[in-house]
Length: 120
Image 1 (cartoon, rainbow, N blue to C red):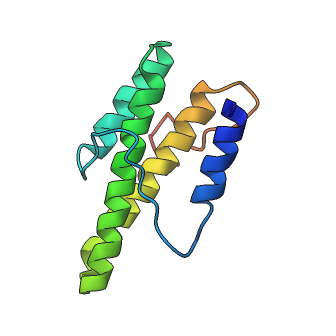
Image 2: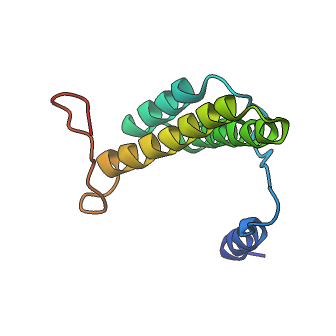
Image 3: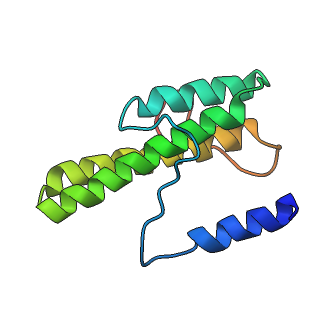
């Protein structure tokens, strides 16, 4: 099986809105440090470092763990903490998209952050 077939299989397996698949592709996950992991991956990408993709993988598992914990908190009725974890997950994924718009091939995206004042 070639990589294109493997990628298709991964996408088919994960394309599911009835149950949750939590990747264990990278051992390090947990709830923290979410944004510092993203920062390390982006710095590695910006400097064309060798660890970019594994660092993004570790960050992605950390985002997953935050979302899984939020789902668990919803089941126990702790809606405030669940919302907090979901918001930080959304914001972390949004930061990833902004970083890719900044560092990716030109013309593929436009960062929405105004770097003069740091606000979108």
